[in-house]
Image 1 (tube, rainbow, N blue to C red):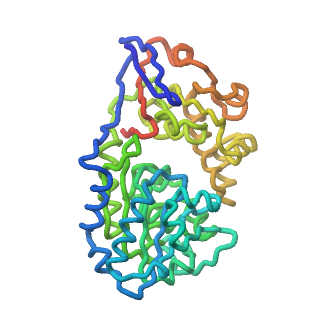
Image 2: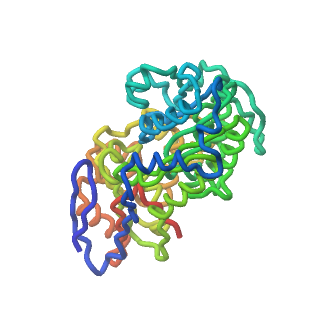
Image 3: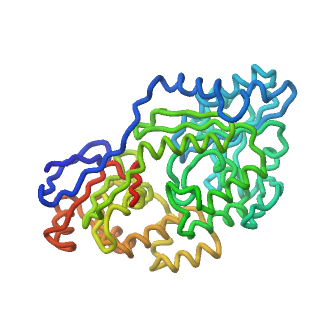
Length: 417
């Protein structure tokens, strides 16, 4: 059977013998029921679990609005225009509104980045700051049930009305993005973020899991300690089009949004394949190895331990992270990386932990444009330039009768058993 999968800005096709093909798994994509503007406008006019923002805020109130940084695709300018319009209806003065980029431990955005995030009009007319874990002023608002001392930007805590915005999707160890992640890690201190992120090693700290996930619960505690009066989050399909939006109570917003994410992208599989072919959904998701590996981690539940994963991603920008690269060179196992992260959590280094865990449990072949020596020596994968060659090698490793599962949009598909 001929199968097509994304690769960079094009598709590549290859043949899997009919007798070896177990299945081809595609996400259940939503088609937006209306224009994105209408979906988002309806959300803010009909909040869940909370009054309209224009009824919550009052003239004279000071307001903080947290927005995503550039690492998350989010229609922030459109969301902000709706939020700001509600605040204007309530009589809130523009000079009393502070917009905060919740970049956590990511690099502090410069002026051009901020303009791309919020739009030119908002950049000109509102005060905007970002989280700077090295220099920002934080205030301790309490402890979570896990003992995390929650330090949050003072300028956020001291505002009368506190609003978070963003996008809900799967997250490696927090379960999902959205709502509480605007606070932790978004606008929290390095100490608070590191305490939280060290819980990523818990077996329940994984994509699609909230109920028993300590990382999520710690984040949620932090949000409620810091305060959050109103949330506005969206869900995007793989084309980055808004297919759902919710506003109001942050817990209700996350619950509603995560259910839609699951309906589209969480797929239960009964049989484990011997060989898994998974693509990082094409550009920009496969722009580098750091991003491409998400497809492998999201779908590896669909292949047996000791089986073979063929990971497909163009990786035009190489590995994509100096921290990731250096930690893969410095350490030789997931256990070594874990011990180092427990001493000091460093953003980007967690990818080395997940990477080592995968190559320790599976035979991994990478089809990419990356330097083959780097792929083999640093990232411990078998490099190939075509899926045909990779599949031939996979059959040699796992056996000629091996069953093959194909997941063309691995970055957006969460396989569970």
